[in-house]
Length: 172
Image (cartoon, rainbow, N blue to C red; front, side, top):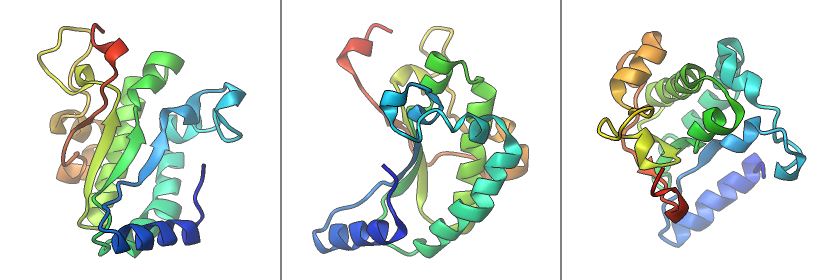
């Protein structure tokens, strides 16, 4: 669900008072899935991923003001751009290049506007490794993201890998 600005600020305040670090997740792969059981906003995000102009509008009007506002908040461990974005490709056919560009643009904007780390909640190790056999390669290495968004320079990168592990995906 979408948190209001007040709810987000309250969440950070409560977390801080309890010594808890927060890793806000900006997006999730469900944003492109049209199955209505995924919520009222599910399936409406494909344009945000595939259209660089829409991505830039989100960055300028929503992301930058938010990360600047919370840039000095020590409760924020890092910003997670997207939960399991690779599933947009696997399940919905969103091009890998568009997903990488979207994540690279957001990473560059966050790095430019605040000191906090940036990551992606990867759907599995196979997307974060150069040694897993094809067709997967490391989607998230610096060179891939910088190539996807050249104007982002060295800011178009992740600070660490966050890899999700599901026992039913081990063989994949």
